[in-house]
Image (cartoon, rainbow, N blue to C red):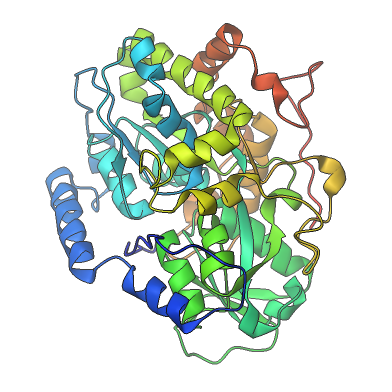
Length: 430
């Protein structure tokens, strides 16, 4: 697997506007990229963990790591709306209501450090892009378990206005950033590119591209809006609120919402260490009770939650409230007519929605699609991976289902089928 670096949180203190990108906006984004010295210090800190626990070594060394035996909840998260339910459960005291002692969640700037922190036992509750646990468990032998989905949809493809791109066909010969090789973003983007006859490739920056090639590069979410503003990339696909930031601050426009391509798709999932789950099922159930309650609250109070998460509220995310609110609530055909970012309005999806059940059909689809998705590094472990086995081995359904039986309200999500709440058909329209 290709290792990513993890620079950059672009904080937002300016009032956003939807006019063309100004030099002031460009200067602002570049100024507020994470200080490179901070990045180096973070990398050294995480590198120390990696060296201590052998995270960059063999699968056997990963599998031998044992989580701490205490019952303090330690949450690690990236500054994206995918982490909403973890943060809301903490902010609203839902963990405390269950008698769970909880530290304030720790903001991590990239997926690789979050993975390493979780593997080292620094965090015992995290959100991961759904393909990450597949890679961790079946390539590295680490006992990660998916406990629930963190949300539905919540991502998009943003293109620079300078490119003139109005459709996926226009991305030929362009540079596009993705947050991680093992991500829903990489899967969905490549599905869309192949659908219009384009070829995803991984080439060095500046290498010549054919007219039908799209060069993919890994970039941490906070770096994407500054890179788009500086015209270092032509487009990016990422979780919110960085799409909203790209629109408002970086001269970007929404090309397509991913939730309009794959109906109510998963993206990030809530994960725990299987050894911890087996060792303390009662504690695990209490954690999941709080998570499901936060799912319901977040779905029913998106505007309030956006303010709570923002730097104007409790400061879990480094964006101002109006940017986060846009990222969680603005989803209508009129606002996104050019380009046509919402082509399936009859799906009644939200820009982001919150529903905890981990549908097996989606897991099967992801495993199958990963087999034909271009990624950096060795992905041969996928060749013989049986989707039906993964559905039962990777995902724990017991605790989330019990929590859903305890709390009502998760049925309010658009597209919910009350007659068959735990199964569904995956619908894709690229």
